[in-house]
Amino acid sequence: MRGVLFPGGRTVTLAEIPDPILGPGEVVVAMRAAAVCGSDLHGYRTPREQRESSGSDKIVPGHEPSGVVQSVGEGVSSVKVGDRVAVYHYRGCGSCPDCRGGRIMWCADRRGYGGPIHGSDADLLLTDARNCLPLPNDVSHTTGALLMCVGGTAYEVMRKLDASGRIQIAIFGLGPVGLTGLLMARAMGARVIGVDISPERLALASQLGADAIVDAANEDTVMAIRRWAGTQGVNASFETSGSGSAQIAAVEATGRNGRVAFVGFGETQPTISPAQLIEKQLTLFGSFVFPIDHYEEILRFTLKHKVPIEATVTHRVSLDDALEVFPAFDRGETGKVVFAWEDARAR
Ligand SMILES: [Zn+2]
Ligand SMILES: [Zn+2]
Image 1 (cartoon, rainbow, N blue to C red):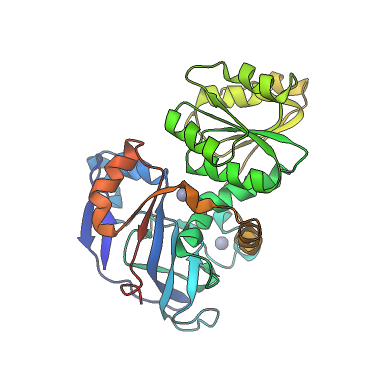
Image 2: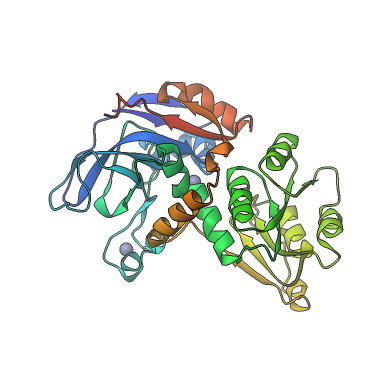
């Protein structure tokens, strides 16, 4: 099969890689759509020596897969050849309490696509049968792939924030996760103000239905949010950027009894003092992908409310374009990038 590799130091190659070998309980999925995530850039940017010494230069990146089952291993009965499936993006041991409870992302033996195991930026993906989530015929593979990371992450946060027509939400960072959060929050009825420093991303947020936007590069973010939401600030904030100044602004802009959700890695130094939470009685929490058994709810909601999650996609390309598209994505010149396979290729 062909697969993308990151040798390190912002380089990309398209390599011939041996086809996966099926074991018991495993499934080979022929990729139809594989979305590129901001977190893939960590591996892309890592220096060559580091990639080589860890062996990750030989691992295919990508963890947002959707495709068609090509072959199944011994003992697999939950899926069959030809089934359309989105693939949950961690493999777990299958038997620990977290795996049994659907929280594969907490399994002590979890394995992520793109490291340590081959990911979705290749013609074929090896996974466990239990990771294969049924994708209805009328749902595109692109939507399936997007739900596996940004879509599921954004939905899960809005669910935890109790997004509804009764609240106003500030979203910090309008990349794919922030924009998808905007779409989910709007579909749940909330009013949304979006914050970013990129004029393109702010314009896209407006197009996608943001009630207001704040250009954090040129405006006092907290003041602007209070002007829009009222002096108490918003009821909830969603921080996706990982920027220290956005973390601080999210806490300052959120009003009494408010909640602030964090999904953006980035800033590693403390930015918020517990003293800032006391008087307003704020609740701060992190969120990390979604439990696998929430998939049906996430899919149902997305379809029922016609959430246009594919509107964040700006580039739909073939694997052959990997060499051009990763540098462009790294430079921030694209929205969501999706590798797509022709029907004939993936049967
Ligand atoms: Zn992702
Ligand atoms: Zn487990």
